[in-house]
Image 1 (cartoon, rainbow, N blue to C red):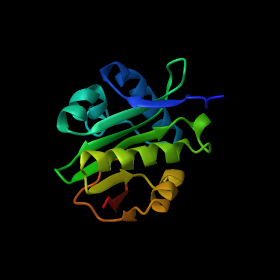
Image 2: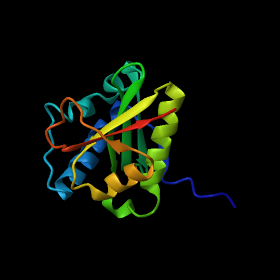
Image 3: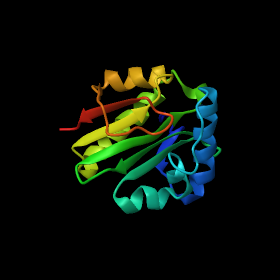
Image 4: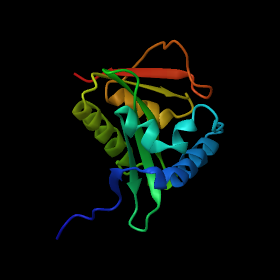
Length: 159
């Protein structure tokens, strides 16, 4: 008997933009955070250009019927550094190890691409996510500037 392959991770494409945006915005709303389609979330309008064409990656966690229940993006900052963006998981799928799956896959992909460092910005209300990041060795740091809805930043050396 084989293990159930669903949900499964796969590379995103621009056909996923609308579903990913719905996922991200619904989770932001859940935590009383505001979507920012003109700045912080503009990358969701063209995932292929924002991530793949820049040398990064964007993956979605998809259910069998096609719904997108999770996502993460690796946004190149420079040759050695990527920013973990848009790592979100639908509320009904939390607590099942899928957040760890997303983060572990993101770390693996970042190393495969050749990044040496991963940064991320988050909001302190996302306590579960922050706990997960810290458990993987992310440490808080002071970036030059933060996105509008973020009040914390973390960094992890990938080597």
